[in-house]
Amino acid sequence: MIQTINFAPGDIVRVHQKITEADKTRTQVFEGTVLAIKGRGENKMFTVRKVVGDVAVERIWPANSPNIEKVDLKSHPKRRIRRAKLYYLRKTA
Image 1: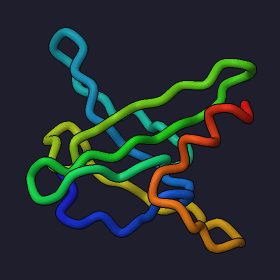
Image 2: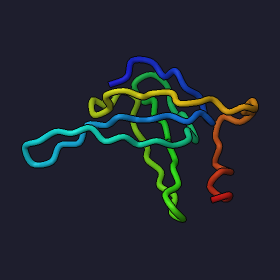
Image 3: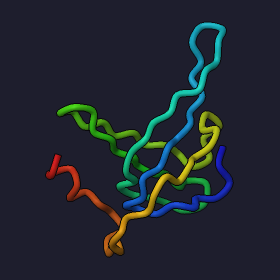
Image 4: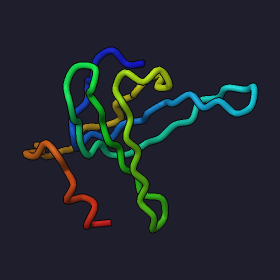
């Protein structure tokens, strides 16, 4: 569970998520661009999109999910992002 969101739409993040398979637990990393942050308080959720080959994959996580170990901020965009929701990135890839 992450306490505070220290990233914004347009940032590239790595989300470390706990995956339980049978009796083992492992960590899976999902790296991509933050498209949106929705809600406030306990209802806050964020959407991350990555492109693998020609296929785009989007995941939505609640910010207070116990399955999220940590979120690493990899980079900020060079230019200032002027939108809160970057859904226009869906059309480019």
